[in-house]
Image (spheres, rainbow over the protein chains, first blue to last red):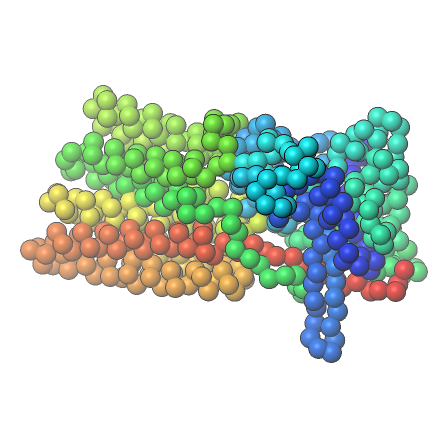
Length: 220
Length: 278
């Protein structure tokens, strides 16, 4: 079995938001919608202060609350772990949005544009009325993953088959791959480093891992 | 250990969603209150109609909130796990039974609708409980609170209406007292459990409404009800005020719960990055 997962190395992320920009460019999301966000956290008290940049978005949970609550079956989970939304089925009730513990879902009722009331050329070219009034979120760039696999490429290794945010990361903080494959890039990273997942206590089994330290030599 | 940004109020569900919980619970409670005292209640059709109207208005309010109104029928597609689908399905059965009762004049169908109404308000409680993104909602005790406050609000509406019509009776009063006490217990249990789960800001929003629920929505109505029993000449105004206070306090708390105390969990880092280790 395959389970696509993402890793964010918190030691490497510099908070440049390039992943956010790449996601917006790739997926043509409207203003204020960021499927890939980077939180800028300030931790501690002076003089012991640390700044941490934390990429967040849909965690593509193995047990996604959004899917369970969805009344229309618009939210589904693929066999490879990617959680999807069928925009033609979604009624825009936003129940998934309040069920998601990661604030990963957006619902935009009216079209809005970056500059004024009308779209700029690129926005007009990629305008999709089907994405208004429904829930949207990170797709793990499933279209890129699927197209890449059809060409015999390896998601997470070959850029053409890899999510845009991962491709764009200037610090190699983001990684993507098959966490079920013990020889994959992400499996190696998880074996070599200590990690956690966001809000694990909720039992959602997220597919997004955060590296925070290397493993001790004896444990690695 | 949490280093995440502070939780913030969800903005996906607003007053329209709150109206569904407010009117749905009251409508269901009104049907149950009527059913409990059906044997001695005249013009029963009015109560059945009012209960269904409340539920219908609530569902209409939430329909106004959905993004794709013409696809509303899709709400029925996921009964396997979605409590919103189940709520919609139960509503269909409830309306079917209620309308059949009104058309046929067969009171037993109205009683069946009241039974189904308990299921409807239970679904509403489970809708909140399934919302894992909102700590104040996902607390399991919220279901009992939503059910009991729905019954108390309905009992309040029933008491006020019957007192106004001059047809108040001990059965309605007894149910009212029981429902209000059950709600107070449900709220106390829910609030106690929230102490360890919800954010401070959520509790700060909820607590004033909780005090109103306990004082103006529980103690004062019970005192008024007893006074009405003791001093018969004041029974009607006492019943009206008691019912309306119980009703209004429940409405206010549910409004706050949905639109003011629905803070998400924010983000939390159980570990901080050890930079330079790789």
